[in-house]
Length: 208
Ligand SMILES: N[C@@H](CCC(=O)N[C@@H](CS)C(=O)NCC(=O)O)C(=O)O
Image 1 (tube, rainbow, N blue to C red):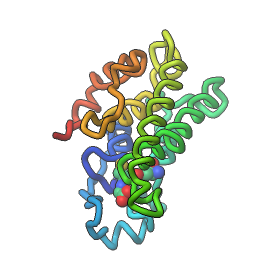
Image 2 (cartoon, helix red, strand yellow):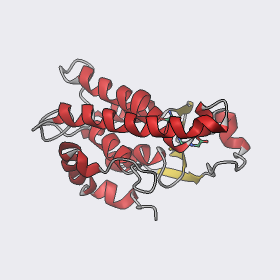
Image 3 (cartoon, rainbow, N blue to C red):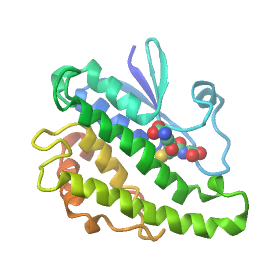
Image 4 (cartoon, rainbow, N blue to C red):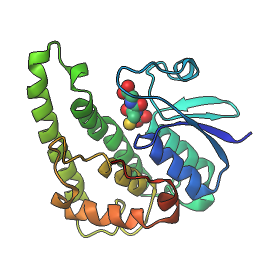
């Protein structure tokens, strides 16, 4: 049974889709409405009650949370070497970055894109918006420092953490007053290198 991926352009589902392309799996894309205030498909809600993408359906059920899906796919396709194996010295750092991206950076993005979810009243939205942008800058700086002169997130070895990083850079928005990726030269270098990969070229559509 081919994988099925609940998907929306420009969303966290892009990371999961790039991994599917990298490992050459066949999959069916299920284009999914995730616009603010728009109803969510019952099929999506049945699998992910949060109403978010990505959701990956496979022969034994469905998984949500992009980082979990990425690790799951990498581990099922070890020959592609997108993740250090469980006993490799880099495994811990690989997991660290995926969890950091997902729990810290994605939350900062949530706060700037869905400010209302973090405020009890409209008057607080401006403060939360400003703080979340500051938070984005702080977190990207941590990542930039960690990469340093390294070629990739894990140093010399390319991994799915670099694909995840690339995805997160595509959410930086001038319009929303976010920092520009150029503020973080090491991040920018890694993201540009990931962008050249055929799997990314196939999947990534810059949004207007
Ligand atoms: N922690 C989840 C977050 C996923 C997420 O925020 N997806 C966004 C698109 S990037 C979404 O579906 N948003 C719709 C909404 O928040 O209502 C993950 O990493 O998979």
